[in-house]
Structures are given as C-alpha cells and as structure tokens.
Length: 113
Length: 113
Image 1 (cartoon, chains in turn orange, brown):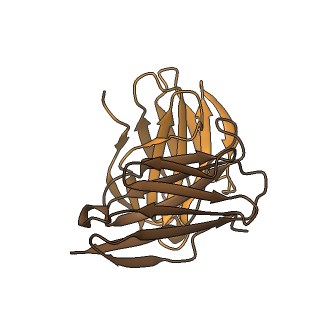
Image 2: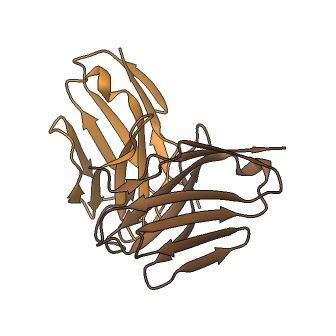
Image 3: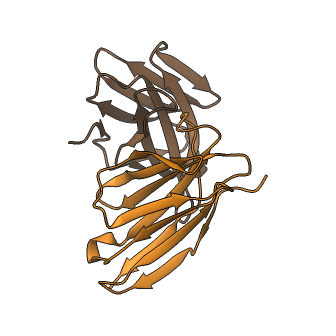
C-alpha cells in the first residue's frame, strides 16, 4: 500500500508570494490533517479535512487555508508568505479521523527568503 | 499555552541501557496518548499508544507508562539500540477521532554505541 505522498518536497519562495502544497493520502483514508513543524515549536496543528469538509482548525492566521477533493487528496495554501512561514509542512492521513494513529508523509520543506 | 510538554530537548544513552523519555500534559480532558518517532528527512511514524483506562502498555522493547494523577507519561526503551536515535514526539487527544492530536516539541534521543 502506497504511503502518504507530499509534493513538492522542497521549495523556496520569497516574502509576499503564495504557495500551494499537495498531499495524497493512503488509499481508503478519508481524513487528512496538516501540521507545521518548526525547530522551536514542534508539530503544530493547522487543519483537518474529512470527506471534503474542514472538521478542525488550529490557531493559524487566515493566510493559511486548505481544501480536500472528492478523491481525498488535499492541498494547503499559504498566501502573502512571511519569513516565519519557513517550516516543514507535514500531511497525515487516517481512515476515519484523528483516531490516534496518523500516517505521515515525508513533508514539504518551505523556505521563505 | 503548551498543553503537551517534553522538557528535555535531548537525551544521550549508551547502547544496551534504558532510555526514558518524559512527557507532561496540562489538559485534564486528554485521555489518549501516543508516541511518534521521527528520523531526519522522514515523516513521524507511530510507535505506541495508551488510553487513560490503562497505566501501562508494552510493545516489544517499548513501554509507555501513564500516571493520570500526575498528568505524566513516559516512554521506556529497553535495551536501547543505535537505530533508536531519532526525535520522539509525545502527543495527546481528548478523544480519539474527534479532536486534533496535540504534540510536544520532541526529544532528540542519541544512542551511543
């Protein structure tokens, strides 16, 4: 069974630009969650989508948004990038929701210059 | 406000000895706890979990202990192996499937041969 796939793996942007990250969950998994990992803050929850609906949202500004498609694939978008958005963005899928065992992708490393 | 705390950023242990990683939480509503392991350039992988109805759960060399009254859990690795060198994240949720996992900042374990 293929794992969670995230693209792109690495990207560099400049302040003010916007970025879109993509996540393909494990086949059959309907829940997709996004986390931001930074060295000082650990993993911080961004949002969770289940059957195309945002079910939970973390404490991030509105510049961070996401969506889920009918095939469970998900995208997250960050607009008006700031230097502090540089981080590893991790996507995780699970069959029904955050039932504990989340299956993570390898992440998308974003650098904002 | 950090609800899940891993107060030791790093830990160094000799091969063959016991590794003990600690985690404290503040939210008394948390009743499901997990440990994840993360290698560089990879996503976190699930290691072991425990629900609040238990105080101990074992899986091979890994044992998690939960002390609800102290709001404290620990992960024991016996015996420690060089391949265990990774960052370990403690995570918690109020109820599996309904609320996002809240992660600690992680502890970097180095097992020295």
